[in-house]
Every structure is written in structure tokens, then in C-alpha cells.
Image (tube, rainbow, N blue to C red):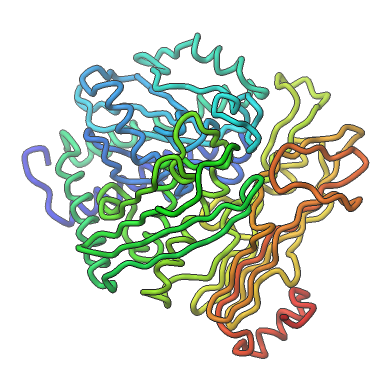
Length: 542
């Protein structure tokens, strides 16, 4: 097809093939990663970009916080390393929170792909590395330099030869040198597989470049999103939410404007940047905002540069949603993952039948750290067991229980957590009465109880929210149950910050439930009877 322009059907086949290529890219990362938060929970992203830095396809496997912020990250690599300087076998790396995916624990690797001697595109991927030094992946730091190793845009490999000095620096600045080095090579391998599969595809279709296909993908996607936006009511709607914050509540304010084939979300009125690591770089704010918009407005349109072009975001500098360097940002997910709920709160005033009530939203990750006697090359253990609360009730269905929306990661299996750390998960079950009552009920949270497997204490890097300000119900639906963090002995712990669990005690977490939707009196008797029989309801709503 190098000499004949492909038709629409051929272009569609090639577009689908690209999606398959990047999904295989992501699966390589999933299967080779050392960090359990990647290989068990899927905290990663993978995608292919054209020579302009436009994202053409993203893997189905992955999180929107990674994918939609990585969508802009490749342009920063191209600005730092012009295309005409790139060579086959080169690999570039960064974990810059403001030019990557929002905090230092995410490494972003970008690899140029060559076909018939010409650079035709770039593959990029990112995953969460469990430890990159500093205070750890918690909100206690007061600037980004306390949060770990900061890697600017650097060349990791030059024509296939890895920079051993850089790799030595990475190994020396982590409590988990084995895992961190392994994860870096895993990221490089997944891009390499993507490059090989793309070349095979281009040979099969006799393509010299991706330019025509890229224009088709971006143009068709943008037109499809514009058509969806044109069917919406035009206007502006505002919404406000208060979340727990670090040492004081944080107010989030959004105004969503639908106009002229575009949607813009502005966060003017949102509270100032925090002195602790719950701040959100603008790239991450954009990522979760446009994800929320996409879910409500264009859920069936593939995610790429074209479909994202008509969705824009602004936030005043030095607010918590546009924190500037060197603000601490390690736990940026706490506030950032609330943003789809902010979008839904605005859009419920325009399209109430397409958006849910508020949910837990932010992950209740359980970062555990401590000493171990294993001689495995690491310095103690550090692992985040992913867990989730309930999502908000939907217009025609209940919310989902113990489900990570909007992040999309899976929960860490208890067996994996116990095999990798000297801990015992004594309890992990749904939390009765936690989903907000309503015509449609909010999803239920969980009860999780964790203790030491030996005589050593362990630390929890708490980064939890929805404790003082639970998910709100809608249209007469009741609020979800607030989150709880305490010791089994009765001591109430702080929702955020590094704390110690004594060896003879246990950490008890109760994740929040989602808000209900509609008058609880409108719920069918059969549904109530089933929930009562299952033990999920033990009392009447109040």
C-alpha cells in the first residue's frame, strides 16, 4: 500500500491492529513487572505515538491517570531529544511529575520505532515503582525533593546499550534495588515488543509511514467527539466538593462549559496548594478530568489525541489542582481521582440520566513497609496492597462494591500480599450497611484487618480520604459510609501520614461506601430482601 492510498475499511483494520499492538505491549509489562502493584493490579499504561507526539492508540489495560497524562509526556521527550537525533535502540526515561504522570514513583520510558531506516513513531509506557527512596509513597513530604529520586529527561539506552551509570544511580536510591531495576528493564522490554509488532504490521500492509493512518485516527475521533458534544445542552454548570485534605479540609470547585463543539472544565475557586504531598500537577488534573468527561459524553470512542482534543482543562497556578514545582505530590491520587466526580456533579445538571452519585473515588491503597530477615537483595519490604471502596449509584443500577473507579486497578490478592511481606490478612470482606441507601444503592466498601506475621512492627504510609467527608448521595439518596482507619486495640489512626502498627496489634481499615441515588422508599422489596439475606443490610436507612 506504499503507492496506493488505503481505503476506509483498510484504515479501520489498521487502526484496530494498532490497538492490538499496544495491548500486547501492555501485557508484556504486566507479565514481566517486578512490582506487584503492576503485575497484580495493572497500575500501568502503554501507547503508540506518531512523529508529532500525538497518541494514536492506548492499551485497554492501564489506568487513565497514567494514559491521559502520558499522552502529553511524549511531546516533552521530542522537545528534549529532536527526532533527527534519535536512533534505533535509543530509550528515553523520566519521572518528572510535571512532564510525566504526576509523581516520582511512575517511570515513563519512550522508545523510537524505525521501519525501513526511518523513524515512524514512538512507543511509550509507564508503571508504578513501589520505592524510589525519599520518605516513600506517602503524603508526609514538604517538597518534591523529599519524595525520592528525581530523574529529568535522560537517555537510558544509546543504540541498545544501557547507561550503566544511570542504572547504578537508580539502584542506589531505592529500598528495593532488585525490584526497581527489574521494573525499569520491564518497561524497556514492553516498548521493544511494541516496536517489533508495529514493524510487522507495517510490512504486512506495505506501509512506509503512519502519517495517513494517524490523520485518519485523529480526524475521525475528533469528529465523533464533536458530534456527541453537539447533542448536549449548551451552557455552564458548577459543582463544589469538600474532601478531607491533610490537616484541613480542601474545597474543590469546578465549572464545566459546553460550547462550540468543545467542553472546558475550569477549577477556579479551588483551594490553595497544600504543604504536604496531596498536591496535583496539572497534567494529572487534566488526565482524570478528561477521563470523567469521556465516560459521560463519549464512552464508546477510542481514547487518542483526536478524541481528547476537544476536552480542555484549566486550574489557577498554585492551587491544589495546579501545584507548581517543587510542591510535594507523592499522593496526588487522593485529590486527583476525585475529579471525575467533580465533572459528574457539573453534568448532572445537564444530563442527569448519564452520571452517577459520588463514590469513594480515590484508591484506598495500603502501602506497608518494614524489616524482613530475607536476604533477597532488597532493604526490607515495601508493598502497596491496592484496595477500594464503593462507587456511586448509577441512574438505573446500583453502584459497584469494592471497585476502583476511576483508577481501574484491580485489588491485590491476599495470597500475593502475604507471600511478599511478613504480614497476615486476617479479614477482607464486604462492609455491611456501607453503601448509601437509595432507589439505587451505592456500592459497598470493605473491612480489611492486617497484622504482623512475626514479632516485628510494620509501618503504614496512610493516604486515605472520604473519612470526614464521605461520598454524597443524590436526588434523595443517602451518603455512603465514611472510611475508618484504626488499630484493633481501639486506637484511631490519622487518615494520612506514616504510622506504626505494633507487632501485637492489627491494622483495621473500613473503606467508604458509594452514595445512593433517589429516594430509598422507591427501592424494590425484592432487592432489599436479597441484600438482607446476604448480610449486606442489617438495619434500616436513617
